[in-house]
Image (cartoon, rainbow, N blue to C red; front, side):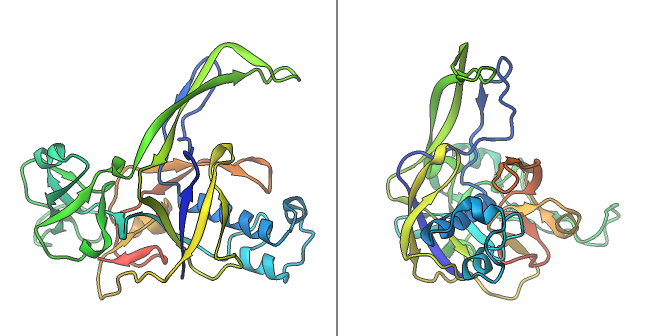
Length: 317
């Protein structure tokens, strides 16, 4: 794998799946960190830009499939030959990964957490197969406690993921960035001049990384990119600097459970291996090849626990 950091110049804007219909909806939730496929598309565009290949010619298939750049990033409209691992947060020199969804803590302890804190963690374990419980297949997992809540959706330092301590350093979702509300006017798209639509405002939440925090991700095969450059990411053409990093060692050990560092497509295969997960998330986006909206698709969130190493985003627990 090759590892990269990304530091945006300003806020980043990744809108949720809510519709934004003039006269009906005027706000939308923020998605952060961005899904892996968004970074994947940004990297493909960056490779084209750095090698002076015009995106229109690329979309029209004017470059041969054996062209070095096309071989590296795939043909337009086709599957990418590389995958993105993460993204993760790096705070100072410490790398943070999603907490697995089979980690739990008592509700009172979770509600008492403020930002980053040392938190008691209970790991769910298989229920005895002698219990008479109807199930579809595989082991059932449980955790002992009064009112337990999952730590999935929170973050833990990578070097503490396999630590057997009862308490771990846990960071809540908003520990690495702040949400800023940006309000603007709506456009009247019914007219050719695209003027301002009267009496309509839109407010969207943007994400701003806190001081000393960067996004970190890996690609599963080398890309013909410079050691540093500009990456355009998200809506409104927000950009920042990417930098190649020294290799980062992900955990390798024998295990019967694995955790994904990124989203997993919500399909029958993933569902069959799923042990613990959170709420399904839905993503769409803009298809540069078709120049139209992508269909909404469901994904299991980062931190989902599975019983098989489905792809290179899955690390052993």
